[in-house]
Amino acid sequence: MSGSALLVWLEYRPEEVKLNLRELKHYSRKGASGNRVNFFFCGACGSTICGTMEGRPSLFLTAGVFDETDWILPGVHLWKGSAQKWLQRSAGTLNVF
Ligand SMILES: [Zn+2]
Image 1 (cartoon, rainbow, N blue to C red):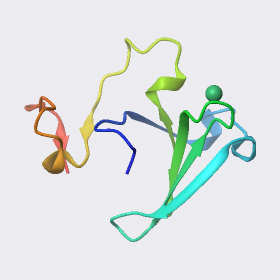
Image 2 (spheres, rainbow, N blue to C red):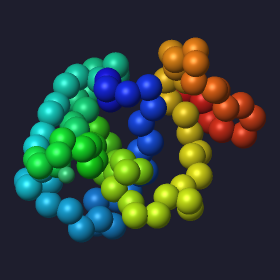
Image 3 (cartoon, helix red, strand yellow):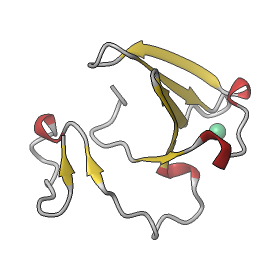
């Protein structure tokens, strides 16, 4: 649960990102897969900065942490089947899970 109808994550290897997770606020819950999903927030404003998933080495940065976002091209939609009806659904070349 992101608290929003749409959350854009960008997947990175941890060594690609200079970020100290210990400086961020943290929330963890069990995901649909049964693995833990961890959300990291700015302690000053509450903005979601990134996330991690148990069993997966990646660091997922939210699109909102980047100054420029025009280069972002979504490659995968997750949970599309339960998307809000008012959210225009993309079709075609995207992978759907
Ligand atoms: Zn902040």
